[in-house]
Length: 385
Image 1 (tube, rainbow, N blue to C red):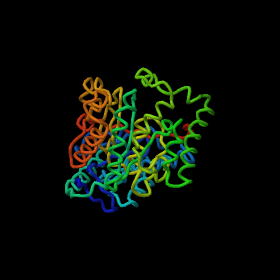
Image 2 (cartoon, helix red, strand yellow):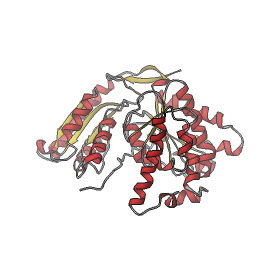
Image 3 (tube, helix red, strand yellow):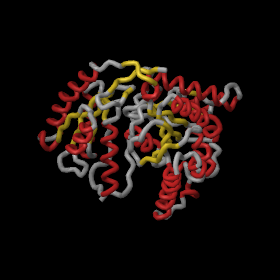
Image 4 (cartoon, one colour):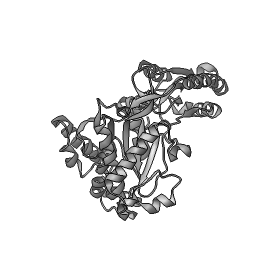
């Protein structure tokens, strides 16, 4: 079972070949965006972070930017810094390069302002695109896939159809030697004991309980009862009544494989198999964390309909609601509503999802890619200072 991949010098295997224009700080985001707009074959990831951050919050933003730049779906990176920011462009570029990635750097203040930085950035970006075009995909085993599991805009069909089918696809990938990442810690709440039973060791089991408790305690410190605040209004309108009910449905995405460990946001898995990443329930922030942790493909289930994609990883959209599929067919890749209708089994749809993952890894574009959805957002630990 093979897919097409670009074998990177540092050992990663990319199923896409992007040139990334990455601002290290919000103050450089506009320059990065203008460079990308002028050079076909590049993609920018503007964000609001990179300054006024300290401690763990600073480290997490830096880790996310570095991990995103070193994702194997990226053939080269141009880091755009301002020159006085906390998350320094020089540091981000150096750490990305240290992972073996082709990396260039420009600093707006050193270039003499925005226009000069854009002009120089365009020259560098064109060279990176030309280098990327020289990379020829090769047949690689399906075990090269690192799958990010995501759900958002959920309704009752998510837990009944789309998520169980995705769990089958995840199990098929893990059985083939690949890697899956389950995210969204708030959507484990109330069902963490079920995941903990699948942990490969006591440390992993305890860590699962810890990350859920931290989310709940963090909400309490801010004066909110997360169990009372969730699920979202759209979830409720779709038939989900409690956070526990939502969590039970969400966990089906993870199939039945043993859980190898728990990772911090944007951390890389320590091996193959199923892993849990501690991310928020915010869909784009969650996907960004998994991709920064090395996911090179994402399957995103959505009952109500969510069009969000990703700047560098293909995102496959699955809905268990046939009405949503036909209403938002331009965004949806798979209709798992056939399970509800009784025309297909969970296993059959799971196989369809897995087969589509392989096709996408061989070059087929997802609907999100065709529409140019490139959402990117980094989660925060603390407020700006």
